[in-house]
Each structure stands twice: as structure tokens, then as C-alpha cells.
Amino acid sequence: MSIVEDRCRLVLIVPQSDDAQKQAADVEAALRGGDVASVIIPQYGLDDAAFQKRAELIVPLVQASGAAALIAGDSRVAGRVKADGLHVVGNAEALSEAVEKFTPKLIVGGGNADDRHKALEQGEANPDYVFFGKLEGDIKPEAHPKNLALGEWWASMIEIPAIVMGGTDLSSVVAVAETGVEFVAMRSGVFDNVGGAAQAVSEINALLDEKAPRFDG
Image 1 (cartoon, rainbow, N blue to C red):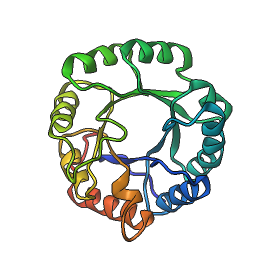
Image 2 (image 1 turned 30 degrees about the horizontal axis):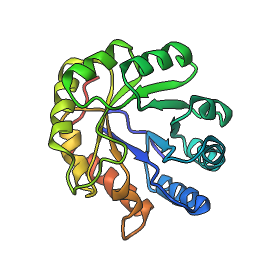
Image 3 (image 1 turned 90 degrees about the vertical axis):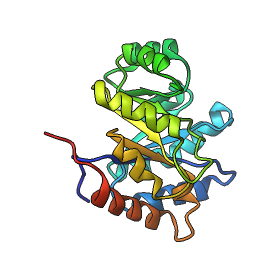
């Protein structure tokens, strides 16, 4: 599988599931569909022990495909399952602490920037990326206009890469790519896709190949 470098790439967010084996199988299927930069694994209210078991199933599948496995939740779980990174859902202070503690051993990025001020505060911590939107924020077919606007503003002036949450419709990745951000995050659009997760990832990559602007250099 060729790694795409010159356009917006896909980040997958693992959906909530009561069935650990099905969750892992869905992730594995999605990864067969084409280029995926990274996979964020949220804790979804599981206790640390249960979450660690989930992560132990999913992380090796993600890494075997060449994508980065990012734990959204407990940093100790991230360490125990040898994940590639940590997705911090707290505030700028939490992000700053995580960057100080885990970079460069782990990829450290942050979410929860729902306005420019918060985004710039997070940027001061110099994380590996900032995330615009909520991990479970794909509630409409299209990406949230506010997140698109923040992504476009950020990409135009800040070097730190950005991920913008897409919508439930596969075609929502195009609007995200057009903002100039490096990554688009998808969850239910991929994992609830009628044709299966692999087909969704394949279609998303085809859309991005065709329509995403190319980065210079």
C-alpha cells in the first residue's frame, strides 16, 4: 500500500461497541480498504482494565497495517499496550503536561479546541496535531461548519498539523480536505457503511485522490 504524502489523509475513530471481537474485526476490515494515517481508540466509559483489553486487540492490527495507534484515554493504558500515541481530550494544560511527559516517545495530540483562543493555547504546547471537533461529533452528514472554519484558519497560518472531524457522509471528507488541513477524521461514516468499512475507506481515498488539494513541497 503506498503512503500518501501530498494530500489530506484519513484518520479513523474506533466506534463504540459492546463486542470487542467485532470491534477489532471492523477495524481490521477498514484498514484493508486503503491508506489510513492513524486510528484513534476512545475509552468510551470503559474502566481501565476493560479498555486495556480492547486496546490490546486493536493496537497490533493498526500497527501491522502501517497506521499509528492513538489511545484517547488513560496514558498508562497507552504505555502498557505499546500504542504509538496519546490523544488528549482535556484542556491546554493537560495537553501541555502530556507533551512534556511523552514527546518524542509518543505522538501527542489534542482535541477540544472549539474556538480560536483554545486552539492557540493548545498550539503553545507544540503538540503533534490539534483536533477540531469531538470524537463523537459526526452527527450530521456533513462536517460541522465551525470545525471547517477553524481548520481553514489554522491551516492557513500554523505549521502544526490539524485533524478535522468529518460527517457521517463519505463525501464530507472533500469539504474537510478543501480547508487545507492534513487529516480528516471519520467514524460512523466508515464503520456504519452499508458496503462495509473497507469499501468506505477505499471510497474515501478515491475521493481524496480526485478532489483534495495537493500540498506544496
